[in-house]
Length: 133
Image (cartoon, rainbow, N blue to C red; front, side, top):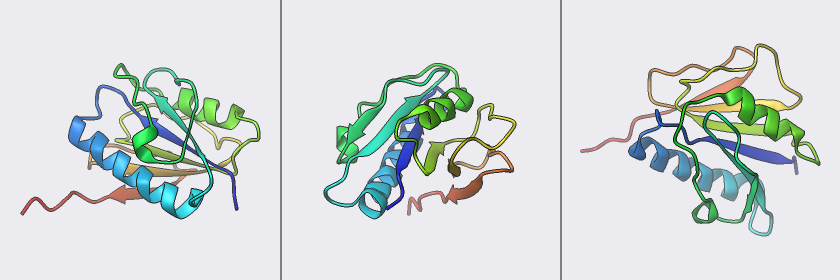
């Protein structure tokens, strides 16, 4: 099983509905990657990376942040973890600066909303809008 870390964008540009969607995605990641008996390392990031949290459920994550955004800080914190994760999943609206080069792990960027972007070196998944009908 690969080591996985998740970076959650908690900056001011991530609205409450978008943050709710990102937490829903975190639940799917926990179920699919971490499994029932494993903990997942989660880092909240706005302009700075906040301390890593090890969680078993999305509800256990304490969402901290709210300032500007700099995913360079979040990815640096994730790749500095020991053991280093094999995969870093970034949950974001994509309105952030990114490292210019590939970091020391595979990265999947989960973009919510239509106006953000991800770096070319990362795999990217867009979270579709929820149908409000």
